[in-house]
Length: 171
Image 1 (cartoon, rainbow, N blue to C red):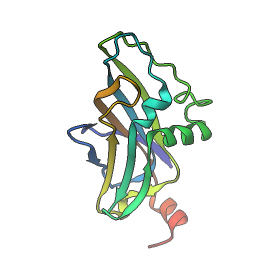
Image 2 (tube, rainbow, N blue to C red):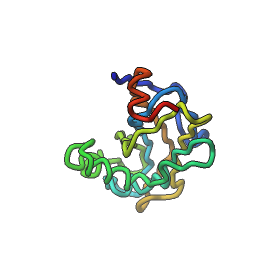
Image 3 (cartoon, helix red, strand yellow):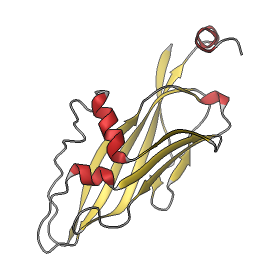
Image 4 (cartoon, rainbow, N blue to C red):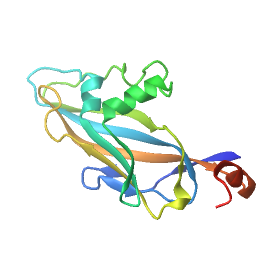
C-alpha cells in the first residue's frame, strides 16, 4: 500500500463553487487550501478573527452519485475537527492570527483545512462532487470576502487487488 497526492487542476471559487473529483482510487483525505481576499470597509484598520473567517465558509459538502452526502459542514467545524485530529497542531488554523488590513483596503488570508474522517472507496461511485459555499455579506463589522480560491488535493491510497479484497471483500 502506498499513497499519492493528486492536486485537482480545476479551482473552486465564487463563480464555480463545485468541482468533480476523479473517482478512480481510495480517497484517504482531501486537503482544501483556501486563499481569501478580504475587504475592510471600516474607517480604521482591522484584524480579522480566524473564527469569524472560518464561519464565513457556510458549507463544505462532499457528495457521491448526487445522493450520498459524506460531508456537509461549515468551515469552523472542519477546523475544529482538524484540531481534534491534530492536522493543524493544537488548533493552528483556529488560533491563527490574521494580518491587519488597513482602512478601506483589501488583504489576503490563507489556510488549509482537511476532510479526513474516513476513507471513501471512490471507484465504486460514478461521480464525486465537492462544493464550498461562502457568505457574500460581511462576516464581521466592515469585513467581507471579495474573492475566494480553493485548491483541492486528494490523498489517494494505492492498493493491490489482494489488499482491496482483504479490506472490502471479493466484490
